[in-house]
Length: 316
Image 1 (cartoon, rainbow, N blue to C red):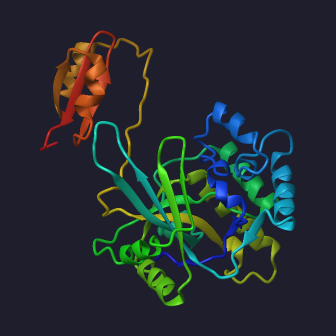
Image 2 (tube, rainbow, N blue to C red):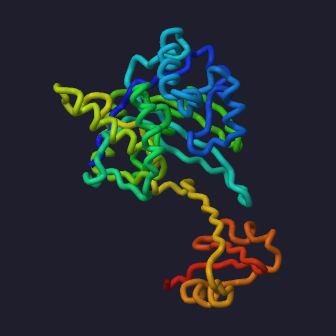
């Protein structure tokens, strides 16, 4: 099953990390144009590597990376490590404090056919090609993808909690999420992580384009390397792993706008919904989010003149 290993991360030097909030950026596929413009004003923000802009963007990122390495902006950890990453957050309508726990490591870049890393979405070729080009020019994986494993015994959480007693960084992002990073160097503890993953499959929760970019890059480098051993760095991918058994793992709803449906009838649509859903009409559309928040299998639907709460029937 999944083979993982520790790695030595490139991190901002200690003096710069006193203002770590000014150096971080959202994932490349969620950062807005307004955020991007603001973040690019800081010449040391990580967005210059993760979402480079303009002509020959990947080449510029590669040159900038070398500059940062040479002038000490970035320093590589001397010892391989597992990086523990916790996110503390709140959700609208809930008083609970949530904490998503996980760790960042290198994982072998498996082909989809190996059935070790499982995908759930298709990809857009241009977005994959952008990631490939960035890998070619920087030879650096700037942001981890997100993988899910299942461990009902919570074998690794106690080691992660212990590491969090001495965090490296703490910051708060633009959504009010508190991010905390800690590090594990202990070889015996790292081996427990490695062994725990050997029996697991990984569901790729987020980062299909980045992962496919790594896949292509692996095969490309393999062809170019006559002495390929399967252990070179390009055979591994940067991933953040989270236990699916944790109560605080949350997937927020996706919003979809559907329009111009030919011959659409609201009444027929509602009648079909009632086969598998309990349908309740809501008088005030502004209260819909509050009504469905936190309820399992509940969805909200806004029609032209009607607002519906639908909930999956137990027998469906």
